Image (tube, rainbow, N blue to C red; front, side):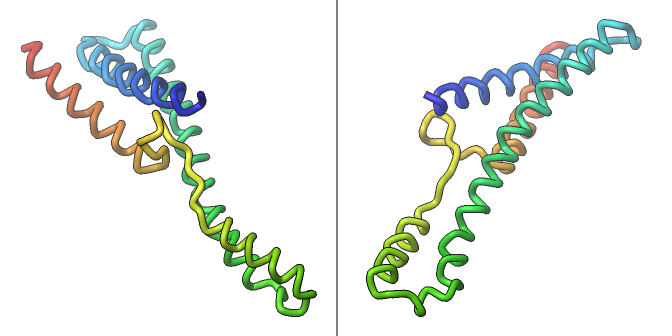
Length: 130
């Protein structure tokens, strides 16, 4: 369920960033409406940054779990505990990620892709509006 919500958030954030940025560039003078658009744009970017930050953080932390288990003094434990630790290391090697729609990994690269896509759409809209 979270995956579908994240996918919708990704699409809506991209469109919102695109259209708000387009509207701001079309404004001739700074007004209270422009201020509201900047504020809303900033809040959308911060909200999406929170998603991508935690996605990246989750990936980085899961990389270190198996290494931390291996670097412990596991060889000094009983054989039964050593076997349990071996299973824990094998399980920890699986990468945990946040995904959008089950196919797009949410991390800092996703944030950059959203900015690139939005900039491309803004450029397209600006060229069409002339």
